[in-house]
Amino acid sequence: MLLKTIARKTLGLKNHKIDKIKETENGTIQIDISCKKRRRLPSSCCKKSSHMVDALNPRRWNHVSLWGRKVVMVYKPARVRCSTCGKLVVEDIPWSMGKSNLTTPLIAYISIMAELLPWKQVADLFHIHWNTVRNAVKQAVAYGLKHREIGKVLYFGVDEISRKKGHIYLTNVYDLKEKRLLWSGEGRGIDTMNRFYEEVGRELKLSVTAICCDMWQPYIDTITEHFPDALIVFDKFHIISHLNKAVDEVRREEARELKKNKSEVLKGTRYLWLKNPWNLTDKQRVKLSELEKMNLKINRAYLLKESFHYLWYYRYAGWAKKYLKQWFWWATHSRLEPLRDFAWMVRRHEGGILNYFKIPISNGIVEGLNNKAKVVSHRAYGYRTAETYKLALYHCLGKLPRPEMAFKFL
Ligand SMILES: [Zn+2]
Image (tube, rainbow, N blue to C red):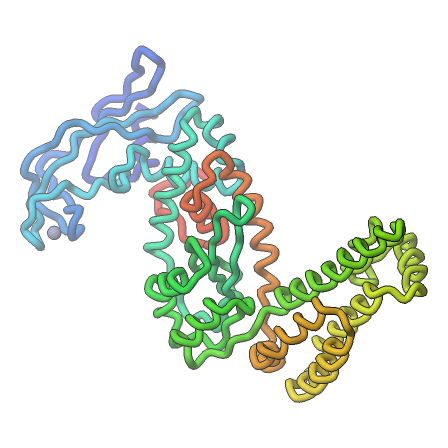
């Protein structure tokens, strides 16, 4: 009797009652449910109280397990004549979501666990298949996306991540203020961005004032087209990473040249040139000052890199522009090709770089989110499709509302 009461309360039954709770041969706890007599039931189409017509074959749902026992609910869904639209449809079953054979509380329970633990572990813990965990997360995400409020987004950042060493690209769009993932889609081209615009972007059009992204032409083109009134701010961290790549190229070239003369002076120095000076260890600092005396190309590249960072200390776009002009002259006269190429890239994108001094946004938070995403992606390991990865991203970074339940198991 007590078990019946608990089951009824945790399921939030109103129009339905529990006929019997029994133990099956394999130890499963089975809850038989029926609908109360002469009840009008809500229709699944319009959610309006309607007359019952007949009942379908019994359906089974897995529910939250109890004392290590599997719990199954069995019920014959009723068909109703919708009082609003007149269609003959299945009733709106309060513990069920679509065609899922998991109860809504179980979906919520599994999906919360899947935010905390690797999916494989959740599957083991619940004695269910990995696919069932994936499905629960899928249902929870579908619910969250349907019920979320996007609201006013002032700034968003567009960022790409690659998986499987660049075989899968995803473009992620983040709300930079609320630190949440707004949209994720496969690819990084114009079609990807157009899809974003159709699905979410159009809604942001009125509120967004600035958009942060990499100096990547498909992003730039589509943002300019769809958000003509928003300011494009090129992401500081991407700019720095382009600069670091140029410096590293100089080092590699020079190391190759030196090796021809049997000199290994640059061996193992990669991070010396890329790290911020205040992050160097004492040993690295000594090594760096020795190398600095040697009149190497990499040292010139290093000085250019360090001086570029002064740019970010300016408060006004006008002064920053002047500084950038000066730096451009140094870089283009450095006789270092990678740095010269970088300088020209900066020159071509100057407007969007200087916009940072009008609206200082960056995709800095994305780094943290991406790290979280990496953990997530490791969790989704085993099914490395873009679709599963996307699901895991939305689940962990979307700040989505959770399915509502009569009783919170977690
Ligand atoms: Zn209807």
